[in-house]
Length: 146
Image (cartoon, rainbow, N blue to C red; front, side, top):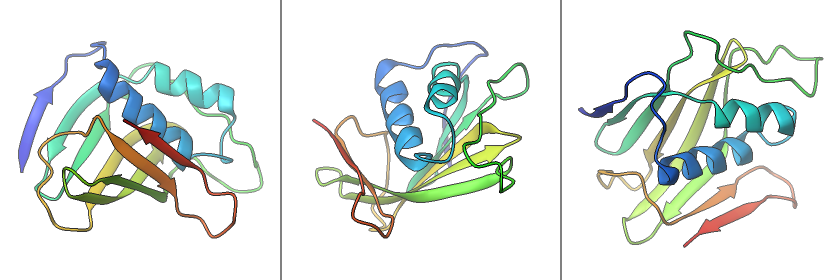
């Protein structure tokens, strides 16, 4: 496994990384948490590490101090510690077709996993991509960044 960039606390993410984290989080957590708390949590994430594992990557966040908690839309279910999936990332130039998982721990965005189903090595976070919600209804959202 290759570890890239151990970000110092309070370091700002570059705009490209922030954009994909924002896009992934919003599409994956759509309908689970209030949009206001989701935006606040994403805007205040502190990058801890990006680890490239060969066919994917793991993006972790520093949630030790004062991380923004998400507000749940449906209080019927305990959503404080869950894995959310249902979004696919595609980039044909990099030969990527990836499953994306967002992990929530103690109502905070803890980490994001991106795993390439095609097996091609992932060496960097793509700046151009298509994200698709893969839920089983007709209202699935698609977001494309060129």
